[in-house]
Length: 245
Length: 299
Image 1 (tube, chains in turn purple, red):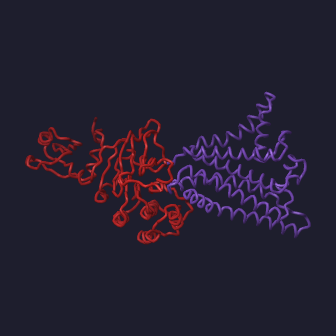
Image 2 (cartoon, one colour):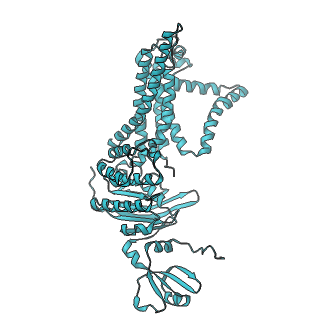
Image 3 (cartoon, chains in turn purple, cyan):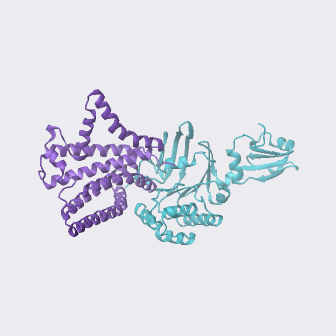
């Protein structure tokens, strides 16, 4: 347990500097937008806080793996410890970011944002403000976790790849998802692409267009299960990682 | 808490094999590193030294066989992995981390890290602790890693090419620091290096690896006693070396030098032959060379 605690402390320390810089920029942008709207007659609101946070946590996840893997192995920690401590660090970071984002959104009166009180909520629940705050926060937390774990997983598999497979995956996956699948759908009159979009929408953003899943509690439960499954996949992907020469 | 008998306190490599594609890096190798010994792990480039150390330190996985540290499986075992420190050629510390921060974190990961000694060694080697990893030259990278290795309070220290990029003066200082550290706190040091002559006096036991297999393991003293070189006219040398274990030969014109393993009986040496003791480096070269001939040989 002590071994995991030290590794976790290191990861949180390592990520904290990046988080401080990130939130410094976000607060500065919000202050600037507030200042502009006060000085001009037009209303100017920055409403991209949690969308920016999603990008931040995704990149953090990718970077977190390769740097921490080498450092922890150097300091006598196993891959299991790396996986458990990086998932724990990500969970803590996601909780902190969910709360900070909510605070910033409330503080700067960002009426509409990406995850909370958003158009997506309208899609799921019919109108804004249907979800109570705890559930709203929980859904944001799940989204951050899922995006972060995706970053960790990509970091882990990218570390194992040589340059060519890296390029093939980086270019191939988007091309397959955004070009090949729609063409297949069009040619064969199927709905493969639409199904993929539905699953991704449900998993990552909590958007469900399936009538049976319009209950937000069921959606939250399904997304929690997806987070746990993704964490397991990431855990397994780290176990056979070798240190490159 | 696991209580262990004295006999279990060692690193045991048992029938370990490792292939990289078609290349056999380690071929069913078995060896033991006892506590509080200084070992020299010698081998030519590509012999498998680094692969072996990487497997012991959980950086690579063996295809077959196992490594036990203090009687426990070393693979993916945090408890026993924290008993050893591996100074590898690769720097695994984050590029933006300063030397001072690296010491601070070493103390967290290896409780009992001697920060005072680390700062003293920084001073001695003129390593600025405020410098970031990416600002260190190859030599100072080696110095930094060696300082961490000498200051962690653990029983096994594995050093892979510890003097990489160091000038003669710094190399000497590092050897001295290893001796002092060992005298102060005896631990197991496994040193893998190509600068054999320089570390001969440091080593208690020598292990020589060739093409992934263990060729020799013996005390440095025994090894140095075990080999000698005979020089003279080819015919005389051939006559003297009949029925002796020849591990290599050099021929220059009519003169021949034969390198022989075995006890030297001075009473039986003909007058026209010169006998010299082999140093560890010569012995190593002879024991690990393939008979492919010189660059000017036709065959």
